[in-house]
Image (cartoon, rainbow, N blue to C red; front, side):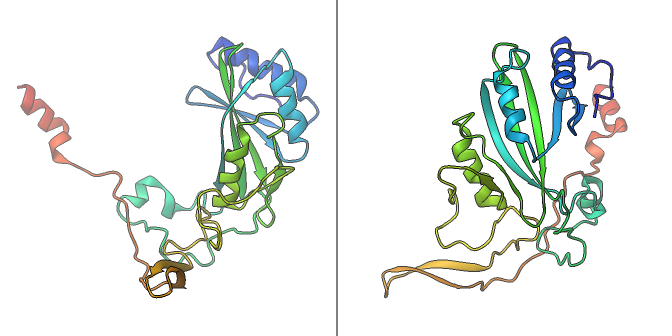
Length: 236
């Protein structure tokens, strides 16, 4: 899919978007320009070859991989998660959301890559959408060695599988941890709790003993101290 805007207002990003149109023509992709940043949206199929092109071709030369992270879009777009609603009527992740989570959405997960070209002094974000039932995508460790631990983190927290990764195992959670804690359907309190048992001299796992709470983050607040009248009175 061709880029929708003729110019981004940044000559470097204009050149980058034009290069993507030339090299990826005939393949399904999208380009988004938001807040001065360019994002390439591409499917998992054929991602490894496109990544190689982004690294090696003189038009791109993205020598550095800055970060790889996962995203779970299963609750994306629901009013309960919008900032305006959450400031007064929303709920935390501990609430019962049965029926609202699109856990089988074919675009539920995404693996997001942040690339840097030192040669051209520009950045690109790449978002690869993955299946909600079995999120799997080719590893890019052979292209950027920095992806090793980044992909392990996304696997640990989101359950994204990176095909061809040399050592895909958990990196943050415990060896016996069940589930992936950054998924939207993972309970806030977890599935089990652990503690050190002095009698057996080892860590033991037990059923969760705490009750889940509903927490509403008050992100936006109306405060008379910062209203127009208050500012006028201060400077009067």
